[in-house]
View 1 (cartoon, rainbow, N blue to C red):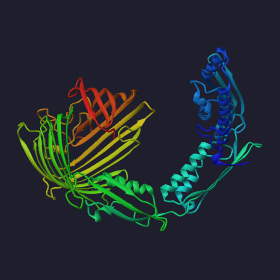
View 2: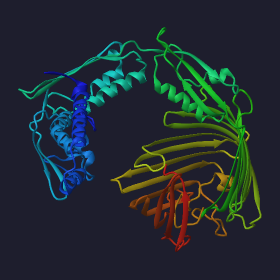
View 3: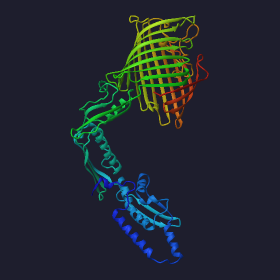
View 4: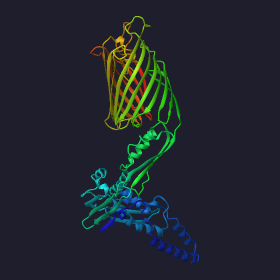
Length: 617
């Protein structure tokens, strides 16, 4: 028996009267009404019987012998089930629906491969109402004997279609599951639309059912037709030069159509600072087998202002003001100015940004900044001018920079706390970071790897010769849905020809604080001067291990141990802190509240509170 694939489906709600049966039913109802209207009134007993017939009581529907999806689909297909728990319909209709229930149940089981069920149907009237019971034995499942799935047309050579074809969810020997069959058809249609096969169609779709052997054969032939190509790309806007906009699409006219490229174009333009709304359309043109691309862009506000007030245990109360100039000219140049104020460190920075050859991944920047730190005899004033080239290369964020900095800092190893030293350095540097994570805010698997190199030489407009490198590692691993570990490590080393006092404070390594060794104050671990003040060191070693366990919804408890030191020699004197914490998964990332104690005295604290907000990676 050859059955169309649509004929095998039994969607919820199927089983309504067909038009012929409805006409017969209406005719019978009309005759009954006419007959009732012609009968003379008899007595009160007849009147009471009429009232009882109009109030049949509640209907109870029972399905026995099935569970899970089979039972759910049967209940959804049973029209009689619409009255379950409610007043039963008029008896004539009730009995007709009960009679038709067997057909409806059989149809509801077929999508799961059961074509020969045994159904024992009963309908009884009780004192409370009516009880319709269906005791069902689904019978032997229908097995798939052969699978004939073919991709015809240009899509037959498309690697993406070949990959889908290799993952056909049904195979000989399996029980026929029509939901899988329908889903695979939808996957074919979706992939064809995504890849530009706008003339694709199913040329053969049939399931051959042999009830004698209890087997089925699936035949599915999909002709993709030709693959359309991108047509001309037109931008409708008056914001940027066409020369810059044409660098955004990662495809060109004549390339094979791919909806993902259109989505990426829309995302890239939407992420740019210039536009408030982006619409990308590519209607297919059957006459030329192309899809011309139309991009409509609405300009955004030229300025954006933001302000913030917060608190950090490392910095105390802090405030932030920022202004973004989103479009300085039609070449896409933009700028931002930022002011940060706190009791420990304040800074003012200006950045002028220029789109690179690929504006979605490359950017040049000119920077200027002023920083003033006033903290625990680690005071300094720093003024910088510089430039950088930043490039997003896959998961790598690569930054190459050159800065010229003037720093006035407190002289270490001096008996006079007011003594200062001036430094002028030209510093080239490179900073690369790679993040792989399933979720940047709350990862269950993730790894951050970053390194930076920088240096200066007296032969190149600098007062000091040095070379410095740093390595940053952080990993997240979840054992299950409620527990995970977070490990991090920071390593740093400096090669310096002169003494440590010739290296500006901003370039030395310190340990201690919320992001370093908890249980110790900010920058409180490191070499000291003759007066016992921490002055920082040439090298750095910090490691941390944290276990986090979710206790309720977005709330978790954490236990951790941190250890580290900033030092000048070859061997660190590690300081260790341990503690407990509370975590809350907020929309902007975890909110962390930690209580830690330093185990090494001094300079560890007996008890220290720590608070931070931000992504895990």
